[in-house]
Length: 451
Image (cartoon, rainbow, N blue to C red; front, top):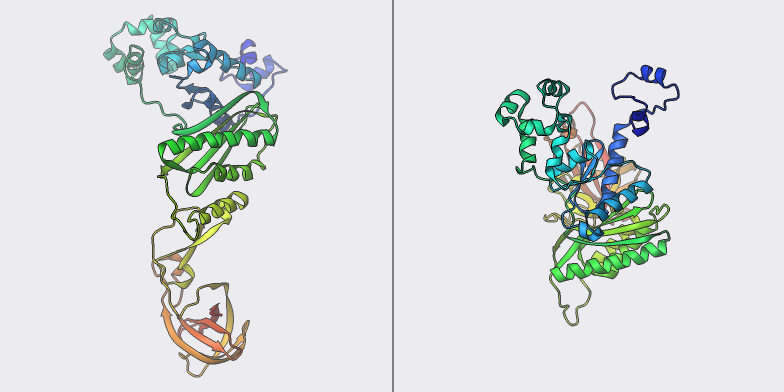
C-alpha cells in the first residue's frame, strides 16, 4: 500500500473483498515481486552517484555507505537534500535517514521521522516493532510493559535471548555499540573509475561521445600512473528518467591507449537509448592487470598489438560472440579436435597436433556416399553419391574408436579413415563407419578435402 491507501485506514492483510466493500473506488494492481526487485536494483545502481557502495535492504529499501562522500554534497544536509530532489523528480515517495550505524539508520528511516540522527538515544522512543520481531513476541513484550526500545535496553540480555531469541539480544548489543555484520554492497567499486555529472542533461550523441572521450582520457591517466592496463570496461549512463544504461566491453589484451578504448566505446554508443538525456556518466575498469611501459624495438617489422586492436574493433562492431578463433582440444575424435572460442579470451595452453593424413579443415557436415571396394575391409575404388569418381590412389585405414565415456557415443561405431585421390585430382578424406559382419552394414562418408 502507498501513503494514500494508508490514509484510508487500510491495513496489510485485509481481504481484498472487504477493502473494496469499504472503498469501492480502490485501485488494485497485481503483485509483481520480480519486477519490483529488478526496479529496486536499477534504483540502487542509480544511487551510486552519491556513494559507490550501495546495497539492497529488504524488498523496499536501499542502504548507502556514505562515509567520505557527504562533503561532496555540502555536508549531511546537502546529501539528504540531493537525494530528496532526485527521488522527487522520479515521482518516488521515500524517507531517508542518516546515522553513524547501519541499524540505527534503518530503524530511524522505517519507524522514525527520518533525517539526521544526531543522538542514538532518540531510538529509545521507537516502538519494539522497529526491531522486526514476530507479532506474538511484540504482544508479549507489550503485556510485560516493554513498549519502547528504551524499555528493552534496561532488561538483562540473557533473559531476552532465552525468551525471544538471539536476534533481539544481538540487535540491542549493536545499538549499544557492538560491531555490526560486514556491509556487502551490490558490487565493490572499481579501483579505477572516472565520473562526470552535469547540471543539465546531455541529450545528444555528440555530447555523450565528448563526455566519454574525457572519461577515457582520465581513466587512462590513472591506469598509466599505476602501471596497469584495462581488460574490461563498464560504462554507466544515468538518465533523467531514473533508468541506468549499462555498457560493458572487454579487450583481448591489456590496454590503456585512450584512442583505442574510445574507439571501442564509440562503436557501441550508437546503439544506446539516451532517453530524455543523461545527467551522470561513470566509466570504470573493474578488471585490470599489470602493464609495464614498453619500448618498441627499432626496426620492428610489425606492432605486436595490431592483431589485438583488430580483434577489439571487430568485436565492438559485430559482437564478441561473432569474432572467434580456433582452440585445440585434447581428443582423438577429428570432429572434436577444435573448438571455436571468442577471440578476445586468453587462449588455453595446449599443443596443436597435426597429421599429414588428416586435412586441416573438415566439411561443416559429412557428405554421405556409397563406396565400392575390392575387399570388404579395403580402401574404396569408386565413390558414388554426393561425390562421385574413380579412386586412383588410397592410403589407410586409420581406425578411430568412439569415446565410450561420453553419453552421446554410447551407440557409436568405430570408424576407419582413408585418404584417397580421385581421377579428377581431388584429394579427399573419407571414413567407413561400422564393421562388416554387424547387424547394420557399414556407412561411408566424406569428411574433408586436402585441396
